[in-house]
Image 1 (cartoon, one colour):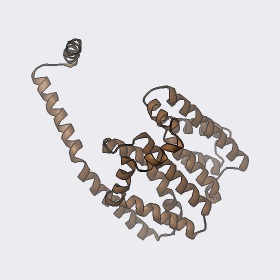
Image 2 (tube, helix red, strand yellow):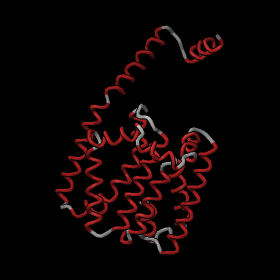
Image 3 (cartoon, rainbow, N blue to C red):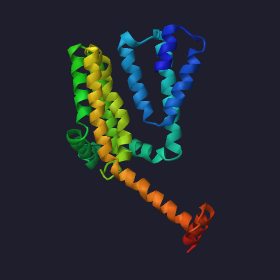
Image 4 (tube, rainbow, N blue to C red):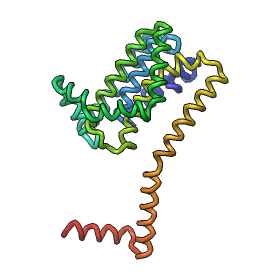
Length: 254
């Protein structure tokens, strides 16, 4: 977004601008299917928010079509290949009668519970951003943000219904939701805060989350320590990678 907006505003490389747009958004969307949702949300957010849209109406329409084609291409590819196929299948096989089951799923309960105990800064940023949008009468942006956040959370609960998924893994799935819900705060509340106050606020937010990260790091540090011990024992017994493969094959054949 930053690169394409810069090219559009400065008129630099204007001839090559469509190729930059296609290449950069292709790379972004291809990293993970969930980026499609974030990309589309931000695209329409900036489209509705005319202050930050550097594209002409014709460019906006053409680039929207490009984004939709890229997203459809990625969706179709993910549906038939690799790890993403099972996740996409869970979504494509969702039916309205299953809605009640998803709403009351353990994953939804897990997320809402963590919003009170762990993700409370996320809640504060989201709510304050929505209030800022309503205060400034940006009702379409409010509707877009709330609906996108609800749909995204619903998709997560459809795909991962129980709460026993690895916390590190499931929180990586929450990250796009963090981008969606913090966008109003970044664009409509933070610019209205005094510079020094805003810097102190951000430092405080990151400091608190850093404390949570340190507290949550213990299991991962222990895992690395365990792997290092195993590696040391293998070296002491002169077991290398080829020997490890041979032992593995023997075990499987038995």
